[in-house]
Length: 467
Ligand SMILES: Cc1cc2nc3c(=O)[nH]c(=O)nc-3n(C[C@H](O)[C@H](O)[C@H](O)COP(=O)(O)OP(=O)(O)OC[C@H]3O[C@@H](n4cnc5c(N)ncnc54)[C@H](O)[C@@H]3O)c2cc1C
Image 1 (cartoon, protein in one colour):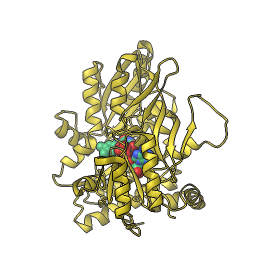
Image 2: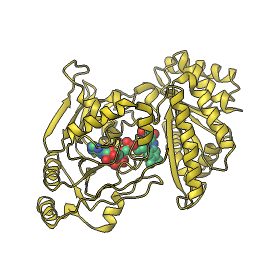
Image 3: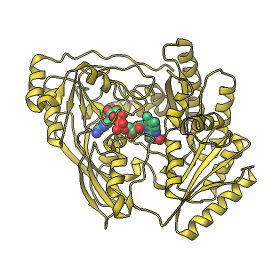
């Protein structure tokens, strides 16, 4: 299974198209090389593919107008949020125009009484939570990067809180979307449930810019819990840590976060974030609820951990200590890269049913033991989701080949266990072959859907599905 970084047939940015985009946007349309290069490169080892121009949009109407110009001139269109994707999602494989939505920063409405909010697509998750700070509400989905809510919707992102609050799939109520011909539609709405027709919201969530451009997102919000407590617990073996997770989930403790870092990743985090955790497989926990509820959850989990060899829980109850702990977890990717200066990361994630998590992780660790790759492991393990980051020299073909071999094995194993080739990073072009392996005939149906929404294959071509 090889990662195909093929360029598609390249569409030319004609003088006429360039003039129309400039007339619409002024200096918010640019063909400057550094700006194009920035927009063709994500946060992983994938080869960058700069677009031919970048259009900075400020409103749904502007996105629609840009798309109409691109449709007229048959120019590919690549939506861009903050560019933190990890599977080549923003690469302009066929050239064309990147639409940067990061200027769409308005929080359009907050309804505390209904626990929902509508934002423009460029609002980031941290910006939203800053805005909500005095309302007693928060938005829980937290990928390690401060990604845009449009990008997070487009990749069906999740993070450390998903075990309790779900992923973008569960938390997007409605969308405004610009289609490939420039039409603007609204999907879903503010009702908490609806049996009204096809669920287009869930079709666009996770479509990675291949079916439409998300310009506004309506999201669920949650009350900040009365009590929050975080803890760190090291284990003598990774099996002990993973068995603790499995039992915690199986007995139904409603943990808010339960994250695994293996000994390689803990060493990296210690060095990068100047911490001094024991260098051993470690679980990071967080409990949300009432004072009594949090105490009860913590006692149950501590007892389960002790059965599996867990050491003392190191508690963080003050907000600043909790922030430090979770910031260190969110910085895990950069901590891994810092182990080898000048390296790039090949991050890959799989997700399996919780009962298979220990087997999947232990067999993957065995593969690593037989290889010389540096590959720290982290996981949103409460969901059955874990990641490896191969820390490599992208100029070294032997390292790339070895990472590919190990990644293939991990995904194949996860699929055999009833899992998926990506729990959260998405497909981009990096995992297209795995998506086909996972979904079989349904992969062709996805291609049919793509053709129905985007007959000229202009929206983020070369990603997710083969057309
Ligand atoms: C350090 C680090 C940690 C991470 N941790 C996590 C994690 O825990 N969980 C997780 O899920 N992901 C994680 N990621 C991956 C990444 O942050 C997510 O995929 C995120 O959702 C991407 O958002 P973005 O705004 O950066 O989108 P971009 O990278 O700009 O775009 C991602 C994809 O969505 C498309 N897109 C972007 N905006 C729109 C839009 N408005 N409409 C339609 N399509 C659009 C793009 O074309 C592209 O295909 C991590 C990345 C890094 C670098």
